[in-house]
Length: 114
Length: 255
Image 1 (cartoon, rainbow over the protein chains, first blue to last red):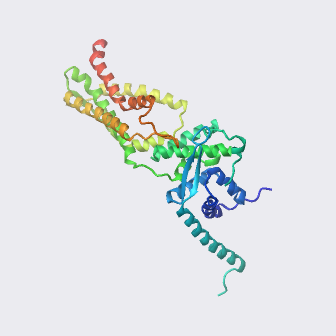
Image 2 (cartoon, rainbow over the protein chains, first blue to last red):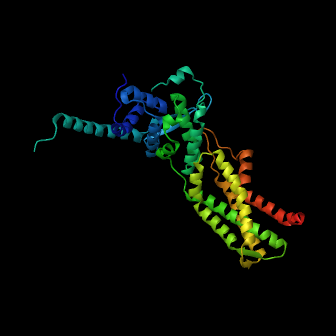
Image 3 (cartoon, rainbow over the protein chains, first blue to last red):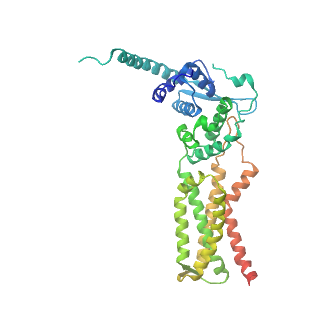
């Protein structure tokens, strides 16, 4: 059975960080990033969602892009994390962990009694 | 690194093999990026990226990227200064003014008469000036219109009806004042020639072709591109020559 898609708001909040994490093992290309995220349980990621994020990361200096030649055309555009991108991934991951724990604790315990 | 099924099944597949149905989407996406004044090299990169993703995913461009207009805006690519784009409208407007100037002054100069200025002539000049000012906005809307057969019919009818209507209006209109024909001819020549020369210089200095990734831009555009740019750049001058040929030789023939 197809799992229920994650709410769009949640995806918007988490996708940037998860795309950065997908790039951590090494250079990869757009469709491979999308399939990796789908395999991880995020659902189908469309090119219209992914590429604006990658463009933003590139402008911020977090990733570098390189076209590698293909058999019959310009080939594939590979993206890799820069040093700044790795630092950003580490910072955001730590911050997200804190946020996630905060949300989890709140959901478990409810509001603090006054 | 994640693998892609396409690599295993058809490693030699050309990433340009996007579906024919997507051709319109790519055309509109290119227009939207041009309207946003994205540099040609970045447009080439965005087009190739989209084609690459589509070739891998096997979906349609519309399904994968949404509307060309939204996707072009959401990509947030760096843009060139908008002033350069507006200059195109200004130069075209000046050229049209010069052309109208020749239309009203060539024959009077040949016949040794002054140019009679009336209300329809003034209205025509005002419409062209307003059109030149509004050209960037107008072009933006026009570029997004999908051509339909009835539009061509309307354009042809307008093209025929407007000159006839204007001629009738000018013939029956009262002359408000006269201007020496030579002065109008000189000003018109400047209005036609200066924008053409300026455009020619800018083409050679600031041409911005769409370049595929990994392709070294040609040191000069192809012959077809140069011919097209030349025709567009010098179209007002060529139309002026036709007006002058008519003024010099058409009138005696008409007699």
